[in-house]
Amino acid sequence: KGIMDRNNIVLRNNANNELQKILYKDAKKIGKY
Image 1 (cartoon, rainbow, N blue to C red):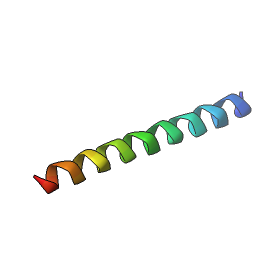
Image 2 (image 1 turned 90 degrees about the vertical axis):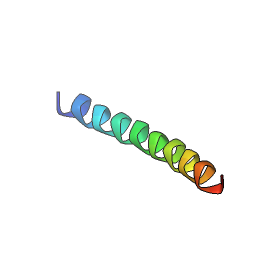
Image 3 (image 1 turned 30 degrees about the vertical axis):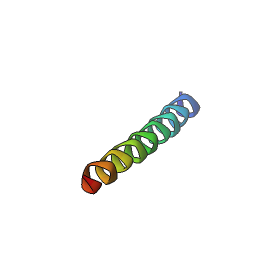
Image 4 (image 1 turned 90 degrees about the horizontal axis):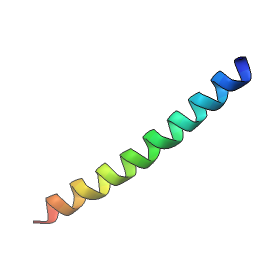
């Protein structure tokens, strides 16, 4: 169970990082206009 929890945390962190990148890009685009 511990290994699965660790994998879930890693996947969640990766997903959060991707979301942050997308939101950051969108924020920069909006900032240009």
